[in-house]
Length: 182
Image (tube, rainbow, N blue to C red; front, side, top):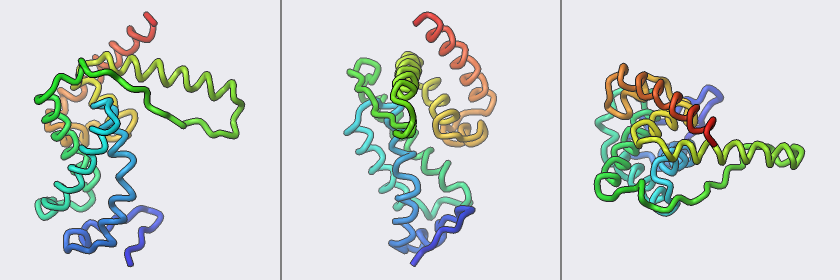
């Protein structure tokens, strides 16, 4: 049985050796953050589920190529990012109808009016995020929603660090302008 400690020592090495329990731990740890990231890019619930599943299948096939176990998360998100790019190349996702995400970020014990205000702010932010170009939207989602460092984003997107910084800078400016106009 695989046990994950408080400092989150993930069983990547065990997964590499084919341990099903280790893969179960990794799947449980990353399934929701990965799905959320993919959904932020694709804005399609079923397609996001498919891409997340494809990502885990690909990770299981290619885990032997992962050199640093501690980089499993950014490596996994990099696979998902590439799969999203492949989808974008096949279809123009900017033209697809965008569904509302069900964000429950506020504790249900909070005052209902506070929850509604928070929900409105989240909706406004998500609508503004949807207006960004895919590269900017991806950078913002990885940095602010998934909390990856700029260096990790560069690795995930296979983009130079300076480009990631530039995208984040311009995305912030565009988001600010969009939110001010709204």
